[in-house]
Length: 125
Image 1 (cartoon, rainbow, N blue to C red):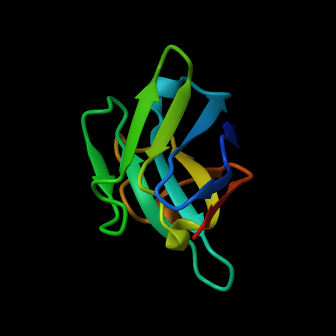
Image 2: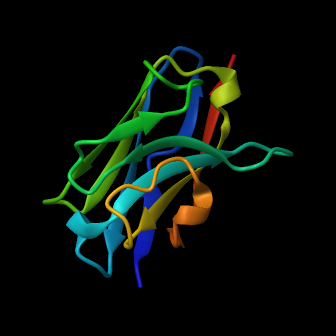
């Protein structure tokens, strides 16, 4: 079992920044492929960013590329999502996800076995 706990969400004005954190436990962190997804009201859950075991592979949704950065710190068993130049359309619940069976799980939410409880991000205009 893998437990994931997100933090760092909140209310921010357009153009501002937030950093989300996701602390993982229950399994060796360096063997987890990690991802971030988000879900806005009335919309399906969508891919935001993903990172491989080693951190050597990253991928981003086109809507966040150049503004968001995913990273991981094995010493802290934590994956981060640095979000800059936030827009009102970034408003959503953000979920951290983990996959212990692959080195990299990419954009497909069905690849991920474990999910956090989510953290709300609200961007005001």
